[in-house]
Image (cartoon, rainbow over all chains, first blue to last red; front, side, top):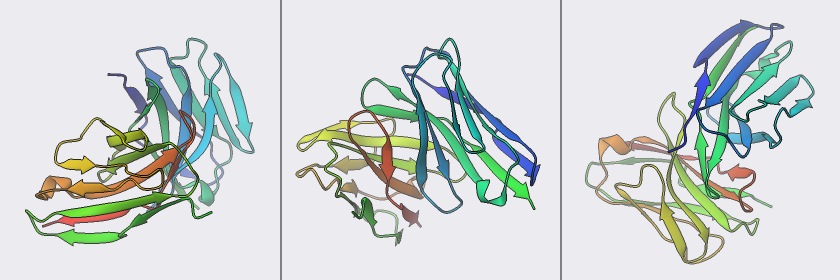
Length: 110
Length: 111
């Protein structure tokens, strides 16, 4: 079935540095979603991208969907300690099944 | 609006015991899901439901059963618990194929 591969698995940065996580699929995706999970918490929806080449911003977070709709990225500018957590991309397989990437765990040195 | 609620928050089971994880949503969502998340890993779909009376298997259904008698409730049943079922279980709901709203999770330890 459809798989989404996410890299890197872990990322440690100094507070104020930028952070990027990448999500790749071997098949064309109808859309892609991003979730954030704080340590000990549950996944929380961040955004959904639908259009080829789409770019969306939420304050310091920039989300991109590739032109071929096979990859996506999340970039955080000037990380803050509140950004700590695991970031997951996810894509629907058919109409009902959401397939999650393995996640990128972000830790920050204040 | 409580959103998605799950009980219990934490449970220890002995091998071979059974239990039911409860999940309730008050957003009138048709779609509901059960995931498991092993330490340091992503989420794997166990079962899902697109409406009352309709359920289907996900990626890792073995050892679990579900039912969906109402729109609000989607319990997950573990029969004959095994150590491999030690995990965090998340229930989620959505309106069609859109944003999924997750519950706080149930941490299960099987010894």
